[in-house]
Length: 80
Ligand SMILES: [Zn+2]
Image (cartoon, rainbow, N blue to C red; front, top):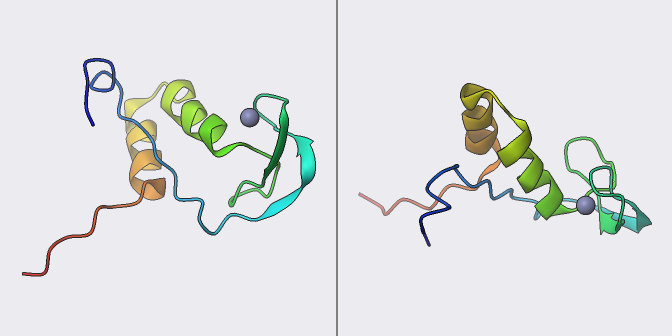
């Protein structure tokens, strides 16, 4: 769903269905306890924290576009 604010920055939606979990440990981004582990680095991290970090911390639009393209699940295309 699009609205005026979401159109400003592309929104990242990570696919963490294959992410592992572990004992509660401080999230590397916010410091609050997290079960999730980053699929890339295996560090304790909330999915939403990672999505927010990619959206806001990547200053370079090309880098942000690359991360969004690489980690955001693609909608399934209809069969031709
Ligand atoms: Zn967090």
